Length: 185
Ligand SMILES: [Zn+2]
Image 1 (cartoon, helix red, strand yellow):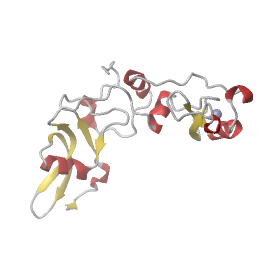
Image 2: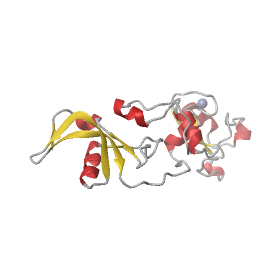
Image 3: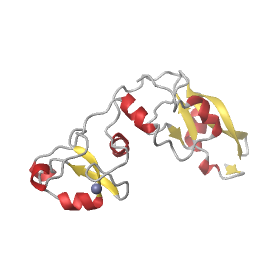
Image 4: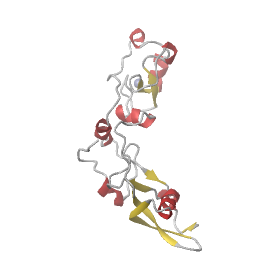
């Protein structure tokens, strides 16, 4: 395939069969290659297209900017425990000093002291705080998280997600992203 313009900046927004994004956090995006593959496998409908065309000896095709699944997938009601979602729950700020730079993760009860890698024990923390706290218990070192870590609901993440919209939103996606309205889980 010999793309005319660079298709690498042309991800497709993937909608469920009900035309809601398959996932918000992270936003469900496929590479243009995966999107075209799904079109040819008849798994998706093309909802909207980019101007960018890919050409091969056998066909020309405008790259899909939005596709919708032909078969409805029941969305997960509980957010995945991922690095991104922990940051989103904690609003991309250190849970000890509220810094927004050099973010990493901290086990509130250190792993060395039996702390688990769970929603209830992992928080966003900046590197300096992480180094300062090291393997000490929060009470010993006097560092308690600003908010008690918890397993967020999809709505919790939607609420915070509106504060941190993705860097790149193609205009054709906007009809399918309800950043300003309350979302059902
Ligand atoms: Zn900090």
